[in-house]
Length: 254
Image (tube, rainbow, N blue to C red):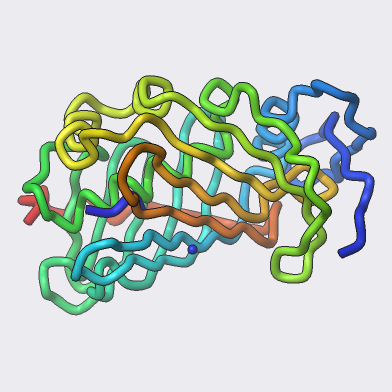
């Protein structure tokens, strides 16, 4: 099971926007500034980005690595990702609460599609469990409630893919981390990570308060996998469409 990769700058938190793709005005943060709300407003203003998602593995199964585009449209997330899911080539489209996947059934990628609700009941070691976690991780950057309490770490500034960033961190309880998940997905966490207590979420934000990197690690008495997201090309032109209904069959979640 997976849950699933300097010069100090005066980084800024408050923002305003003039529509998708517009420059974000920023001001220097004051102590106790609402970092989470500022970041979420910047994300919803810029809306689209390139994203890579890496989910590590602590078992003999391969890690998952997917790259593509993501759209933050209010409470709805869309993504178009390609790469490998536990070593299997795959093309994954997230359309709100529905997953479309090509390749996991053994057929060549993009020749056939399977469809399933995010967080639907899964066999214990199904690769779809990983995709549920990928889908959930994409929502974090737009969830101010989940990230309430996010604060600058005080560490020196760093870089992500050549972009100067500053780190901020929040540790959330188990209940808060799972409260928006479908009941069946929450049950999967309860079964496979019985002793986890919550999640440690570390963001690296650029000068416009946009996330460039996110590392999520479950907390608790055991070693747990991590999920890492890297963002780039915010406000890029993105169009994501789900496969036609005639091309997608309901998945058996094998």
